[in-house]
Length: 118
Image 1: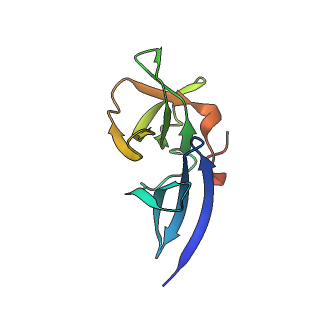
Image 2 (image 1 turned 90 degrees about the vertical axis):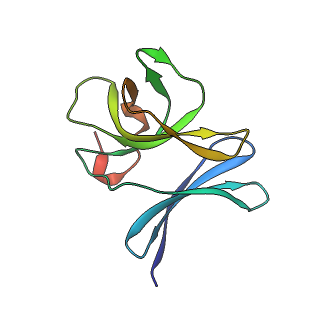
C-alpha cells in the first residue's frame, strides 16, 4: 500500500484540508482541530491544462463567500478561470459540498500544484 502526503491548507481556525495520494489516487480530507476526519472526497486528476486550486471563486461575476477547492480550465485567459470540478468547503457543517461548474470561475492565484503553475 502506498500513501503520500501532498500538502495541507488551513481553511479556518477549526478546519484544515489535507491532500493524500493513496495507491495512485488523490483524496482530500477535511480534518478538525481535534484530529478527526470530518469529510473526504476523491479528487479528480489535474495537470498544467487543468490545475488544482484552493481559494476564492465568483459565480456569474459575483464574489462568493467561503473557500473552494477543485480543478480549473487553464486554457482560458484572465485572472479568473472556469471550474472543471469544484467543491465549496462548508465550514459550519465541516464537509465538502459539490459546486455547480456552470458560471463558476476561480482565481488563478489559488493554483497550488507543481503541474499547474502559471
